[in-house]
Every structure is written in structure tokens, then in C-alpha cells.
Image (cartoon, rainbow, N blue to C red):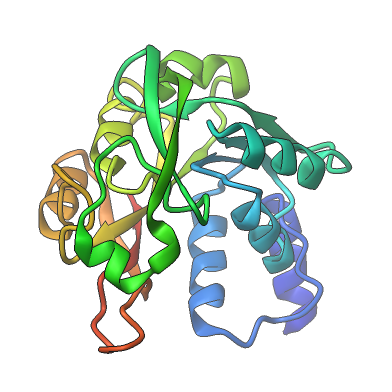
Length: 235
């Protein structure tokens, strides 16, 4: 049985050396295989944590990681440099092409184009902002032909710290090529003007994407309150 699954996985650009014990990972791999995902756009890559994770799951297709912060991008480049199928791009991703100013958090990965709210800092003290950076902003619609081939099935992971809706809106001309989205969904507002979970699910549904898998995410570890989840959407 394991040999059969490995052969099927390799057919779709994956190489599974063992069956993962985590049911979330197994279901994610099933969804990636059934949708024949060949390219992952990693939006909000930070230092490459997501790319490393999906490589460990067995995904061997192409990855393009977008990261706007200078320090994080330097580390991302080092992470991806020995992987011929993984490209790092220094850019923010949103709903327009231009220049933007991003708030940089102490922990780096909570950095956002939006103002942070006390609820977030209360749950993660290092989420506090310490400086600003000027960054390049691009839409997925503007770069999709540069980083992928026509007909290639694309999966977009969005970890944009409250800016998920804007990233999604910047993909609107590419929905025919994007087969799946992975989106960080906030149950409570952690950033000013952030679109919350219910509305994001509805926006994705209207575009033809169904919620197929959900995973627990960021929480306040003092109170146990769940603040964010990870949603996996496919056509």
C-alpha cells in the first residue's frame, strides 16, 4: 500500500518517503495530489518556514516565496539557495503594484501593513512594532506569468498578518490558474481593518473555492483562547 501511494505521489510532483502520521498532513497531501498542484506561491514567507515544512511533508514541486522584509529575505535566500525548485523574491504581495510602508515587529513574523491591536500584543509580546520599512508591493496577477508556466496548477499560501483579503483581491484575474488557497483566518480582529474569518470564507466561496480543511493556529496561551486558524480551500 505504501509503495502504491508513493508511486501516485511521484506522478504529481511529490516524493513521499513515508506515510505521515499527522492526519492534517495526510489530508493536505491528498488535496495537493488530487488537484495536481505543481507550483506553490508562498506569500509572506518570512525566513522560509513554510517552504521547509512542505518539503518535509514530501512536496517536491516548485516554490516561489515572497518576503518584503530585508532581514527576513536575507535568511530566506539562504534557506532556499540549495533548492533548485525554490525561488525567493523580495516583495510584498497585495492588491496593487507600487510602494508601501510596512510595520516591522520585534519577532519579524507579525510584521504587517496594518496597525496592530492590543489583543495581538497581549497574546504575543514580541509582536510589538519596532520600526518601519519601505517595500515593493506587487499583485499575484502581475507576476503570475513571470514565475509560472501557462497551464501550471498553482497553490497560493497567504500569511499576510491581516492583509489576506488584499492579497486575495490581487489574484482575481488568475483564479482559473489557482487551484487552491491556504489562508490564515482570524476569529478575532488582531489588526486594524482586518477582514475576519467568516467574511474571508464567503469571499473565497464566491470565487469558487470551498473550505476543505481547517487547522488550529495562533492562540493566547495564558487564556487558551483561539485567535486564528489555517483554512485550506480548493475548487
